[in-house]
Length: 565
Image (cartoon, rainbow, N blue to C red):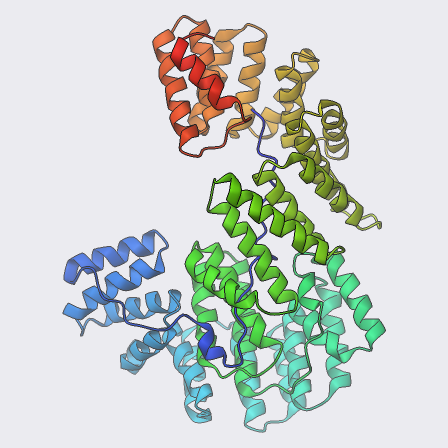
C-alpha cells in the first residue's frame, strides 16, 4: 500500500504556551476535583490513571482515596505528585505542606523551595535546598540553585560563576553563569558566556534568546540566521528580540527548573519534566524572556502527554500575541484542528489557515512544513506539491550531514503528492531522486515500487525495490502489504497471502490491507472469508480510517454487494 505522505506533525516548534504579566495565572485554575470514587475504588481509579498516563484521572482517583484515608502518608505523596502532573500546583503545594519533614519527597521539597523563594524566605529556601542536596544524587540543577540563592544572599559573584560552571558543564552551565553576570549588570561577560554556550550547542534556544538583546542589530540578524539553520522549528521565537532585564531570584529559580525539566524530558521522563515545570507556576516571574518560555514548554509537554484540552487552552491564549510565540500557537492549533477531525470542511479550513500563516512568514520553514502536512491531510495534493517545492527552496545551500536526508524526505513527500494528484511521471522522478539521495529510504522505495506494481509497470524492478524496503523495515505493515500485492499482481496468490496476512497482523485497522487480503482469498476460492474482510474494511473506512483514494469506498461496496472482483 502507499504509505501516508504526511511528515510527522510538528511538536517541538508547533506547541507554545500562554504568556501573561502574572505567570501564576498561566496554569488552569487550581481546584480539588470531586472524586468519582472513594476508598479502594478511588485508589484503583488513581492507579489506572497513572498507568494510562492520565494525570487528571489519577488526581481524581487518588483524592477520592485520600478523602477516606487522610493519614496515609504514602497516599498523600502520590496524590501530591498526581496533582502536580495535572497542573494543579496550588493543591500539590498544600499537600506538600502537610507532609512531615521526614516524609518529604524530592518533588515536595522542590515545591516548598519554590514557595519559599516566592515568599522571599531565603532561610527556608536554603533549608529545602540542603535537604535536596542530601537526599538526591549530585544533580547539576542543585548546584545552579545553590549559586542563584547565594547571589541573592550577597555571596561573591566570581566564586558563584565558577561553581556553576563546575557543577554544570556544557552549554547549560554557561547559560546560568551568564544569567549571574546579567544580575550584576556585566553584559560584556554575559555576552561572551552566551556565545560560548551557542558554540557548544548551536540549537540551544535559551542561550540564543538570552544573547540576542545583547547584540547590535546586524549581529542579531546573523544570530537568527545561524539559529534557523540549526533549529528551524524554534526560529520564529527569535523573530522579536526579548527586552533585556536583570533577573530576580524568582526568575533565576524558574530558569534553573526550566532547564532541568528540559533535560529530564530529553532523557525520556516527560511526566517528571511536567511536574518540575509546573512547579515554576508558584514563582512571580517578571523576566520578559521567561514569561513566554515557561508556559510555552508547559504547553509543549501537555500536548506531548495527550492533554489536548490544556494545550488548546494555552495555545488559544498565546495565539493573541503578535510575535513568534503567537504564530507558533496558531500553527499548532491548526494542526490540532486537523488531527481531531476527519470532516473535509474542517481539514480544508485548517489547511487554508496553514497556508495563510506560511505566507506571513515566507522564509520560515516551520510554517511551510506545517502547511504541507495540512495540505496532505486535506487531500489537497497539488497544493502539497507546491508547498514541498517551497520547502526545497528554503533548504540551506551549505552542505551538511543532514542535508541529503532532509532533501530526500521532501522529494518523497512531493512525489507522494504528485502520485495522489495523478501525475505519475513527476511522482516517479521525485521518488527516484529521494532514493538516489538516500538509498535506504524505505518509504520512498515502497511508494515507487507500489506505484509501479499498481500500474503494472516495471514489475521486476518494483519487486526489487519492495524487497529492499521490506528488509529495511520488516515490521512496517504498509511495506509488507506492498510486497504481498506485488506477488498478487504476478498471480502468486499463495505467497501473496503469506505477506498480506502478516501485514494485516501488523496493521489490523487499515482498510486497504484488508481489501488486498480479501482479494487474495477470493482468488484462492475462499469467497466467504473474502467478503468478511471486505465488509470489515468497509466498516473501518466508514469510521474514518485512512483510505488510498476517493473511489476506494465505492470499490469496496461493489465487492461486498456482488461478491466478486
